[in-house]
Length: 85
Image (cartoon, rainbow, N blue to C red; front, side, top):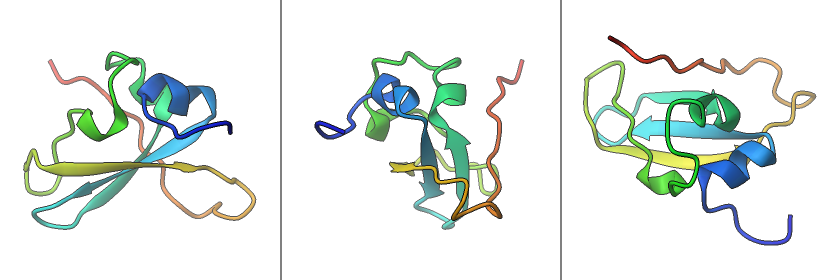
């Protein structure tokens, strides 16, 4: 990578994983950036993505992008985002 990953589009292009952690209860969920880009404007900054905790319902979540190495971390759970109607 030539520079820092700032937007969701950049993270999706590099096949990155987004780790979303709730600041209230500490619950962590992981999503593929390319899956999240289908629901959110891909030009948004990663830290400003709108997430809500599935455990406590809190809106204060911290988002971090990281590389997804399938060989080293085959046991992690990657969630698929969905829009509730």
